[in-house]
Image (cartoon, rainbow, N blue to C red):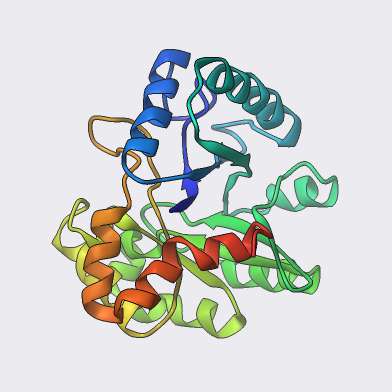
Length: 239
């Protein structure tokens, strides 16, 4: 499986604090059937002041450590980018790494705040699309605005955004309401990829298979596997 969204890099966001903890996440990912992980630390101006160069530096140190220890997890890096006007100059200055491409669009992992879909989000998406940047919206099924009113996600789907659902949401890790929203998104055929959004081993481990199994009950085997294999591979240019 390919995990497009996880937080393994130590000490740069709310993921692991130490290299040892970060290494244990990689080991667990491999044991859980994940062959490739794209490391996506938060870019959240005012909270996590990450940018392409800082992420790349942390990534290179981590990749070197895994290679030294013989851990067979293939790696890439991008960023989970918080919606807000602050990211516009960062994108213009090429300070944000993208996940990959689909057609002629760069793919940006875009995150709403946990509690709401901010005013102006649709304008930001329009601006991104006008620059051939297509958002892959991270875990919409866990957003409180969308949980209160499912129709809040519809304009973004109609604009052409892709959706990434957390595998743990489908399997019930994030509670009944997130699971119900995840199932509804799957039933409508709006989910492009499942990902772990792993942060730690205790509460948010790098696991995807149970979520895929639950998705299989809704979509069938082939479609559920596409969410964790073919679709992520397409973005990464592996197909």
